[in-house]
Length: 314
Image 1 (tube, one colour):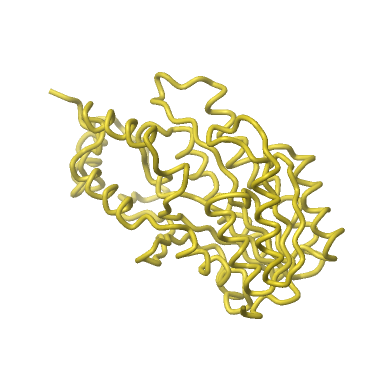
Image 2: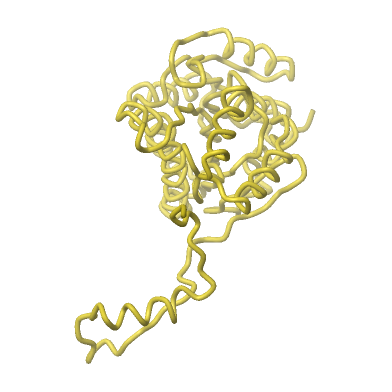
């Protein structure tokens, strides 16, 4: 057992299973007290079960730290406030926040119900914002804090998960913004995209859905190769959970506003969005853009080496 986080107090959402549980245990192993937050839902967000959170609490306590369960819904602004307050009430402060909770409701956009979109965004994006919002009050006052959010490589583009991919993209943007707003107060905010083997990423339902998209030609050969690499590197979360413990430690005090990818074999960092190519005119003399000019300019100067990721089928 290490002592890098000794005396620190952490709130981990989705801590009853999978990545959240592995993260909670990694933090506990380094000495942090843990508020284990998990509603105990099925992968699609239905149901509720206290058993997963209670089990993680018992495992955390074996490291000699304090651990308490909370069964709130991260998508609720009030429940998120209660989680943060519970961490403070039980342990004295909230020093570390790890937003791991998530659900899946995959469908193609033309088949997706409004409820499927709203629920996934409510848990992933709004849930992450809810916890960041309430934790930031305490972290700003104490001039210390570590926030670690969970995104996904799906934010760069996916098929069959417009709700999930867009929510994860929102978390990336949220992470950048929170990092800039809280950095001056000694609070860091980073995110990681895990390549993991959990109940949300493997199983018969996920494999069947992927095969349908491949058979229908919705996933290109190049994209499939990239996905196979990701799936091949998928690991039990215990392999990379120490990376999140590192981000929560003083060793990462100057690491802020970064988006990482982690797996069994890889630790990487995503580039920050930037303009890679542009055409600029004189500001003072420029007239409104003309379509006939853009028809030439855009392909010749901006779309150099561009390839349509999903061209029409012949």
